[in-house]
Image 1 (cartoon, helix red, strand yellow):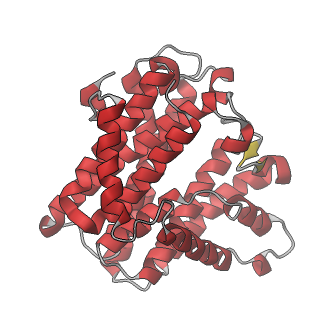
Image 2 (cartoon, one colour; image 1 turned 45 degrees about the vertical axis):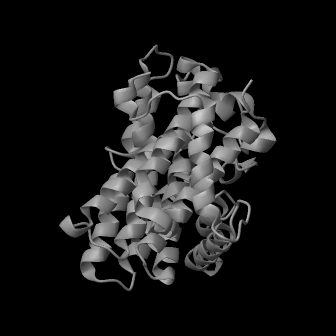
Image 3 (cartoon, one colour; image 1 turned 180 degrees about the vertical axis):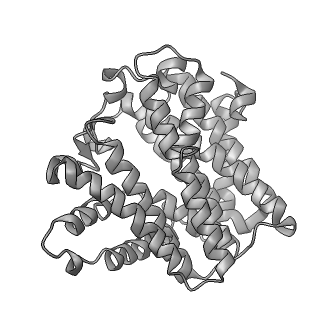
Length: 335
């Protein structure tokens, strides 16, 4: 494992759990409510309502396009990226209504990348969130259009925000960068190019940081950008948020790699074992399951340490780390 590349150093489970325990104490506050916290449930519901409003079924006309867009976007999911936006926005005292709209735009963009990734020419998946993928249910041509249209609607949502011009431009730039050749599109291209090859771990880490990590980073930054410009006065805040999101985004993908090996269809909502069947190198296949699991724990710990100087304001970001940690322990316990 290239520790300089990943920004993480090996620690045993005891050290990782201790760090995350401190995060839990910070996150739980005086109420001591167990995860998931009430704000996660309420925030996800608000974003869901915004998505349903923006993707209105009445606009379908004579085609199935809008129905397919709603199917791709409104079929559940943990809404992790929207919640990251809400958590970072709360830290920055951003208006709740603006965060809900931005979170919805992020979820539309995330859904568009999933629809395209599932296509036969890409990862060729037939299940997503426990349901047939869009190209299976609506046909490949419609699925391509769904991905394209969701991208456009995401940017339309950002362009329609009641926000100062510079804020809107910054938000559009962040989301565009996250799915560009330097982000999700480039990461997917790299993923396809590595199939069947023996590669070093740092190549897999680079691919993950682009394919899925870039949108995680954008989600955090966009929450803060709803209220705070990225300038010298806020440099330390954005540095902390970038370190947090780099570690958290990579941890989420490592966990996904592990669950592809250890979890069943009901847990994943998609076909397990796809990576091995497609001869795709992953962190789990290169490092082994237990090393990959520890790697994920180290990354979650490092993400927590990155936001520790922000104090109680970052409690919601810490709660999302603890939720990911709990998910890992539930579905990929130490053996």
